[in-house]
Image 1 (tube, rainbow, N blue to C red):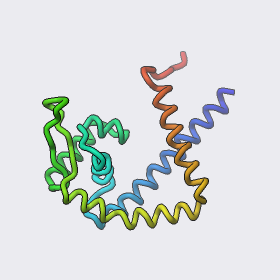
Image 2: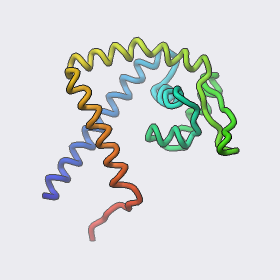
Image 3: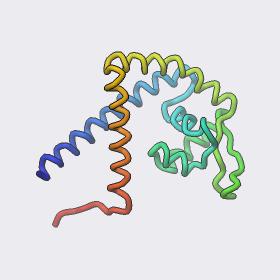
Image 4: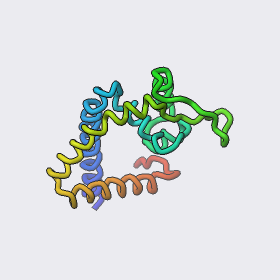
Length: 155
């Protein structure tokens, strides 16, 4: 049974890696007219609902803290985001979008909506919603099985 499970895991990983590349390419295209990159959009998108520290953005987005810090500093330098004091932690400032950052994200909206509509037409509403549920469930399961575990190696 283990071989079949290994094959499923490998096929899942390869599919997700390919999907990640496809989503990054589409995101770059959607973000470019707004003067953003996919990673800038990703970090700004994480702080639209509320300001977050870099470590919180990294956790939510599945990125490294160092990668988020680099992007956050670029966003601040470009005037698309700013750092605010964090009442919970003196040194870990909160990142929040500026009005310019919110305006840039808003420019992506029409292309994003059009892509969502095309995907819904291609997949069907029910299958599209189920795809989201399955990906969220897979992510939660990976979080659960990898909590505190060390890589397993065979002798």
